[in-house]
Length: 314
Image (tube, rainbow, N blue to C red; front, side, top):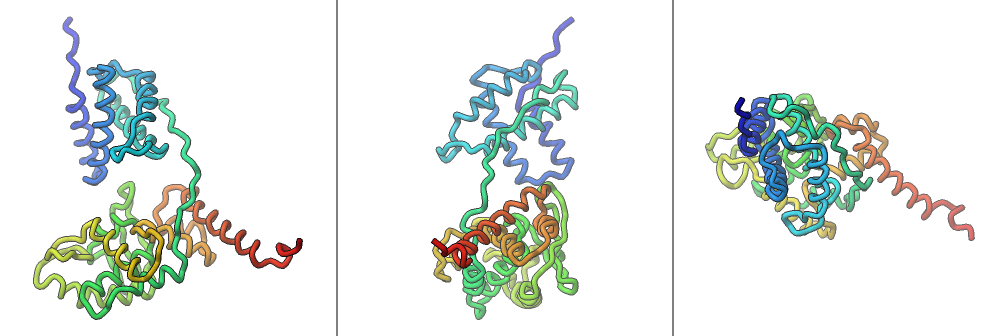
């Protein structure tokens, strides 16, 4: 009986991606997984493994060791989080191959993730710094008003940069004061409350400023770019945040994602419920949200050491 021929790795990966598309995974996720697959392909070529049925648990352990010594595309050392993202791809990819009958057993079933350091967000903005940056845009210009609205939404909701860029006009409910975040991380939808200031700026922006920016062009996007009818791009968003940080005279490195950290930290400092913050940010695990709580405790300890009378006793 003739042995069944092996299916090339790139064909198997294409089938895997097709299944993810059917399951409504975003193009951004597929792009990230493609990068992971190329990294895995480098290893497969080095060890000369062409048949998925020949991959064992030891093969994947060897890949994990190989990966540890591989620098990133920027030439820097690979962090545990970066390694774990690649190993997460390995686990889901081989689970798919096993489920579809391409391999008799799943060699990735017992793959273990590396321990990641329990780090806290760095350079979170103070309330005064956040206020200075948010109020830096010139409201007398169309793009200045748009940028102020963007900053109010980033600070007021803590949504991710990709989530903000994917917002459509219909995702804003000004009457209820809420924002519908659709297909966020993990393809999950959630509802996020808006601050009164964010609502105020969004109302004027949607009813007037945005229409002037579009100049008759049609677009569903909430935040439009200087290219008529196009969504604001991820690089443009970073440039906006960086520009107003400089104009405000804040010397910290501020990115769109830092507003997420800042929003969460300021909510918890003002005694917001931890689970409410978890739901607002869309964290799958409460332990992720707890990082911000530990940050507020660190601030509390610093204030205690500085101001409590008994700390001054020699």
